[in-house]
Image 1 (cartoon, helix red, strand yellow):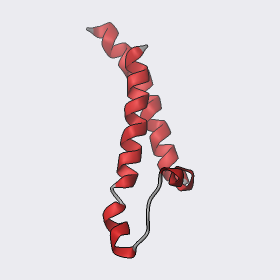
Image 2: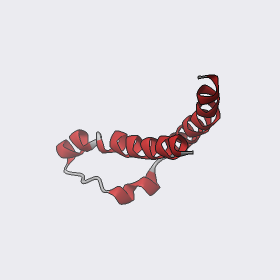
Image 3: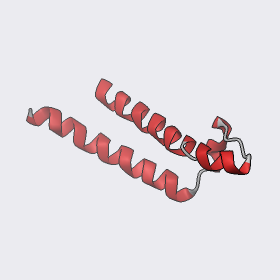
Image 4: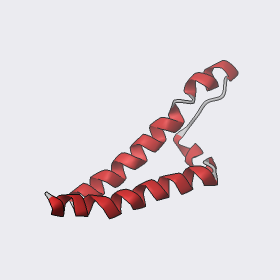
Length: 67
């Protein structure tokens, strides 16, 4: 169970970092990126995040059983 929670937390953190990498582009335009911008992520991003989390939740328990 702890590996599942850890996986979900990692996905969330990596998703936020991925979005924050856009800061370099924002520096050129003067746009500031805030954590509240998460609500503006597109449908494709959330679909990809959901698929990744669902895949990891389905695979990780079977890996631990196989070992």
